[in-house]
Amino acid sequence: MKRDSRLSGVLHALLHMGQNDGPMTSDQLAACLHTNPVVVRRTMAGLRERGLVVSEKGHGGGWRLGRPLEAITLREIHEALGEPSLVPETPPAESPGCLVEAAVNNALAGAYAEARALIEARLARITLADLAADFADRAKDLNIGGSHGRQHA
Image (cartoon, rainbow, N blue to C red; front, top):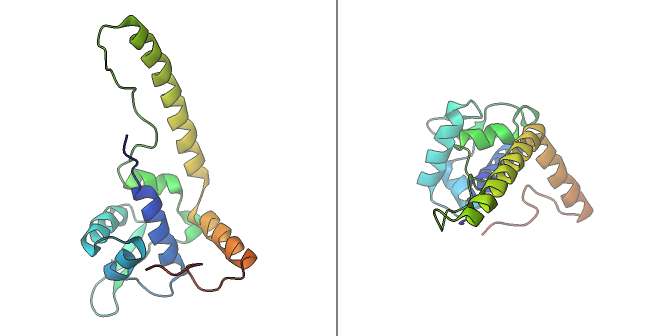
């Protein structure tokens, strides 16, 4: 199964936005994320619908957070992204009619459902402020200044 990295990428972008004094353009965010500005705009539009970010048009415009860091949970961001799979919904059915596979898949489906519920509950308790504080602690421990800890290419 291919890993969906949208959540981690969006969290990265939102933390940069939270550290920036003014709005950030799609081009700036795309450079941070090593992606195309069109992808940034499409993703941010979904977050804007949920009030997580706002956009400002014109010269000096761009994207900024719609709420303070402590008022945005990772669960809200995950939902705004369309809830990309963190755990499979169901195990693969490779041998239809096989009773052994049916028993295995039944057990796995229950475990997957429990895992999803635990992950969702945990994401609801983590805010962007928590991530920003963790970054600040790591940067302080390493005596690193600036907003990145290391430069993005």
